[in-house]
Image 1 (cartoon, rainbow, N blue to C red):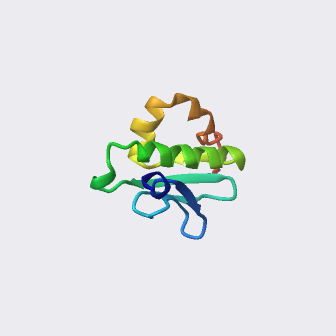
Image 2 (image 1 turned 120 degrees about the vertical axis):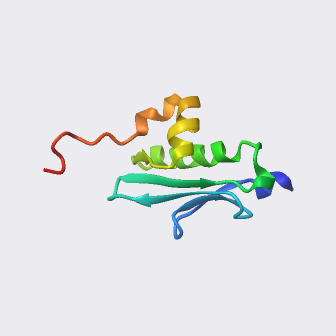
Length: 102
């Protein structure tokens, strides 16, 4: 049963990827129709060390890839620990075009 509670689900309404028991989650904001800004990742102390934060990130990055989204990794876990250990996902990172806001 422990596997089921750690299953990652997409909660579109609350803009989260979360475990089925809702204890661990990754929050994001949409910055336009095709840019996902990952803002926060949380795993409670009782579930740390199980790789849940990485599983949440993989779920979010896979979702972005499947929906042709780019990612802004505002969350320090994502921009630091996750991407440094999983550089293949760097291809999904948002790259602002020079002069796009001018």
